[in-house]
Amino acid sequence: MKSIGSYPNLRMRRNRKADWSRRLVQENNLSTNDLVWPIFIAEGRNIKEPIKTMPGVYRHSLDKIEKLIESAIKIKIPMVALFPHTPLNKKNKNGTEALNKNNLVCKALSIIKKNYKNIGVMCDVALDPYTSHGHDGVLSKNYVDNDKTVKILVKQSLLLAEMGCDVIAPSDMMDGRIGEIRTALDKKGYQMVQILAYAVKYASNFYGPFRDAVGSQKLLKTDKKNYQMDFKNSKESLREVALDIKEGADFVMVKPGMPYLDIIKLIKDNFKIPVFAYQVSGEYSLIKNGIDKKILSEEAIYESLISFKRAGANAIVTYFADQIAKKLK
Ligand code: PBG
Image (tube, rainbow, N blue to C red; front, side, top):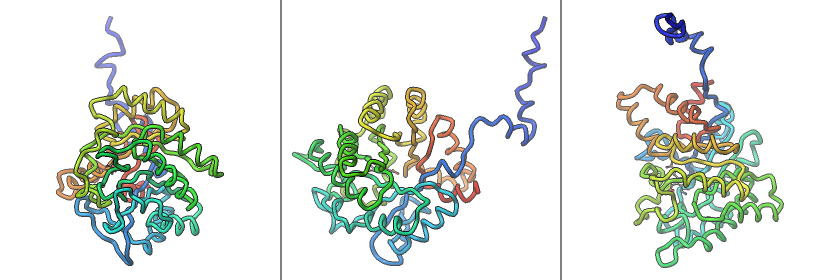
């Protein structure tokens, strides 16, 4: 006897026959609540400077910050991420501008935190926007010195917390920094400041446009392979995440995004902690160029973001956040 559970009785296309039916059986969804919007800030006044390698993304001066934050709140983006374009004359080999309480990020933080309650602000902890060599830490004999760097990152984190940062996001990939930062934050009374650990960050070829945006691309003479992960590895990501959870991370990041959906799923299947995905600058520019050249339809953005949700991401850092949030609303 022919089983009823096979063709022609069974037809997978039946559930796809109409929009209402497809909506009924959809397994994943994207909402504005899933989005983190990175904002690049620059010195000067009345500046909205295009970034050549990231069409549609700009560096904004501080007098534009309030407008940007208001637009983010209006479209219900829960959190923004601040990245500074530090002028060359403020960069040096130890990245000391990172510890200046009048630096761009600190100023932006105080503007935002004075005026707006209903939006989170996340800040990267790493020295690359501030160093004259573009590395995320300080060098000893051309090698990024882990323990010396961690000491500075702790100071950077405390300063950011003092200025009102909600989520400290170490993106530097030094060993042991999550624990050191957590301990220091707690000791100074910042128990409620969250830590988003860039736990799984690969030495990727997709970061180029970001480095252009923060002005480190031309300064960087060597790769970051002795601190960021080797993209040939996946099991190593489990160890990285386990360590950062033990050290006190509140959420973990996987970065880049689309070429690493397998890693997002691996982490999600093995841990209970919220997982963030970063659709990085190179991914943004590829998709954006495809759309601008009419090779892709704009729907490709939505499809790319849903892929993160399907893999198990709880939230996505994406340069498309404002554009897609407007559409979702
Ligand atoms: C640096 C940092 C990088 C990114 C975020 N923080 C670049 C790097 O590690 O060289 C990349 C983000 C992107 O490409 O969108 N600590």
